[in-house]
Length: 127
Image (tube, rainbow, N blue to C red):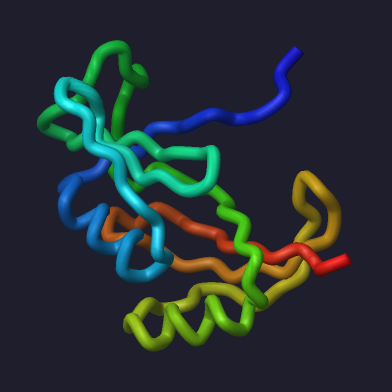
């Protein structure tokens, strides 16, 4: 019945700080539509951002910044991601490590965003 994830919501302390981090560190774009949550947009996916003092209805029962833990997929070699993270001063918590993702074996690196959400960026083998 379910075929994909369209979007999910992150509750953050500062939408602008979050946008800056994801745009600068991971090259993710943004979407701003009046009366709607600001979103991080990449490919056919997006992450809506709710600021803790300006959430949208409906929302999670206990929206909390820093409670996220998710995986993003890159088409670049994980070494390039690691180089970019280091260049941007992002501390890598774990990785590179082998993981089993939705499509099989992948190589992952883990770090935290400004709200301390755990972000995993993974690369599947080419071919």
